[in-house]
Length: 318
Image (cartoon, rainbow, N blue to C red):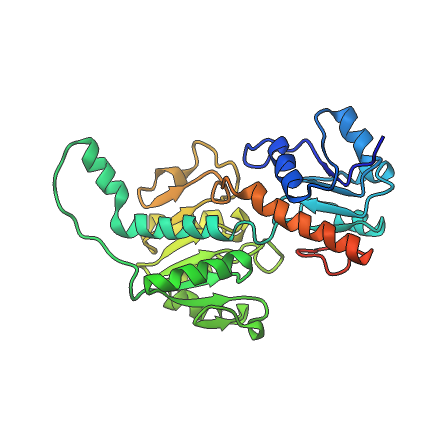
């Protein structure tokens, strides 16, 4: 039996079958063997022979079986759910899906801003009542957005905001790296960025620095007419503090693709605000997801074969 070059685990991404991922990998790697596990027994048998495995999760206990494994290609951008220490100790490299979400999440954010400013929710409500009445709106042109996090998503968003005439302030750990934003500052200047922004957009990873970053103090620095958009992780925002400022009308509103807790309970007060838009961690959903993942993994596999090493892989995190 031929050992597979790539094994796809039995884990769906945004409801898309892993078989679709396997098909796309076969298109990118026509000279390689790509196997898609369909049962637990098959998954375990394939793990024992695989050099490259890809999926959402990888249990540390599997390492005792996966003796030939060189690379786990995580299909999520975040890898906080993985036991990366165990993988590193076993000599297994780990890559993530950074860059896959740039176009789709950027479109989500821009769509949410336009929906707020053009008041599409009000338009829909009046349409349902066949009520014809003009109403005031705003525009993005001439506004300022503070984008917290200038990774692949943040940079893609900044590049797409500029054609709308939006000035951008990027907030990142290492401001000396710069970026496509009109201005780049460190987290030590985040309150200055919040105070100047019409839109505060969170696109940062969840770390010790960013957990609870947008708390009562940060929200107090935001303008009363500012909008908050969270496409990062729910715990970046202190939910209780956000509810308080919304009740007091201290900010204009929010769009939340992620929440804390998640899923958001049906009786949670955030559901009741007319100026809050909530989606079920869906901003990353795109039919192009597997296409982009496959391109990254195929390139990395070729690099491994050319160099005989896992050094220099795209999106390597371990």
